[in-house]
Image (cartoon, rainbow, N blue to C red; front, side, top):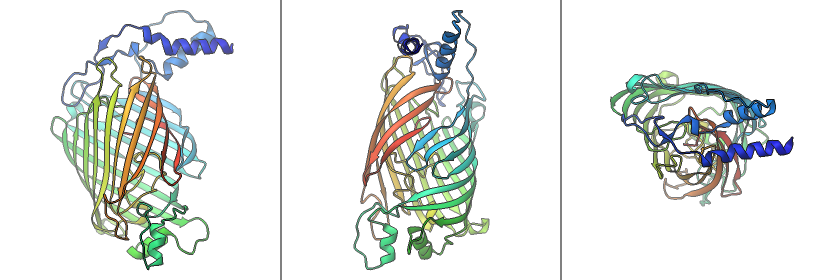
Length: 430
C-alpha cells in the first residue's frame, strides 16, 4: 500500500508536465485588461485535487466525473510555526469572491481564525478586503481580540552607541537580551476607499486599539518597555491608541493572494487623537509599495516581486508596543528572518525582493528565494537609513486553492544575531 501511495503522488505531480498548455482567462487587473497568460483550472492542481485523487484511488474509483466549479472557500486546521509565536494550532477560514464582472472588479477576500500557540498566545480575528462592482468602493479592515506574548529585544538596530545614561542603554539593548512582554489587545480597524480612476482610490478610516494587563515576564531591574514608558509618559500597564486615518491607494495587481504582475501602493496618515480616547496624540505616515514583474507568459507564476513597507514619525510619541518595526505590518510578514519587533524605532523602513519560480507546470509546487533589509532610528542618535540589518531565505509553495491562488508557504529565513527559523503560513508574504 505504501508503494502504491508513493506511485500515486508521483503521478499527481508529474502528469501535468506532459499536458498540453491551454491559455484561458482567469483573473484580471483593475485597469480593465484581460489576463490571458493563465492556465484553465483543469490544468492547475491543488491540495484539494490531491485529496480527491487519493480518495478515488483508495476506493478504486476509475470513473471520469465532470469537475464541479471550484469554491473560493478554504477551511482548514491552522497549523503554523515561526520563531515569534512558536507552534500554532487552530482553525482558519479563507475566502475569495468577485462582487462584479471579473474584467473590471478585483477579488474580495475574507479571513477569520481562532488560534493558540505554544508561547501562550490566544487570538481570534476577522479581516476583509471588499471591492464592489467595477471597484467603485473598497472596504478593508478587521477586528482582533487576543492574549499576546511578544519577544522584545529593545529599540533601534542593535548597534553599540556610547552613552552616559544607563536607561538609554537598557532601551537600546546592544547585547540583544531577550525580554518577554505579555498583554491583552482589543482592536478594530476600518478603511473606506472611493475609486477616483481605474486603480486609484482615496479614503478615510478609524482605528481603535486597547491594550491591557501589560507586563514583562520575570524579575528585571529595568526593561525596555518600562524605560521607554518612563521617558514618554505612557502607562506601562494599560493604554489606548485610537484615531483617524486618511488613505491613498493605487492598485493594478491581478490577485491579492499571489500576484503575477501589477502594482500595489497604499499610503496612510495615522493620527492618534486624545479627544478619541487615545492616551496621547501622535502622527505616523505609513507607506506600502509592491511591484510584480511576470517573467514568462507560458509559466505565469515565474515572477520577480519587490516590497517596501515603512512608517515615519511626524509628531508625538507612540506607545512602546505600537512602535513600527519587524513584523509590524498588517499580517506580520515584514522582515522574515527575525522575530516580530526585533528591530523597531519611532520610524522604520524595510525593503524586500523575492524571486518566485515554478517547479511543476501544474503550479502545485513552486519555490522562492528572498532577501530583505531593515533600518530604524533610536534615542541615541542613530538616524533612519544610517544602519541596515539584512536577512534572507528560501522556501517552497504548495498550491492550496487554485480558485483564489492561495498557497501554503514554507520558508526558512535567517538574519544576524543568531536569528533564524521556519516560517509557515497561507498566502505570500506580499
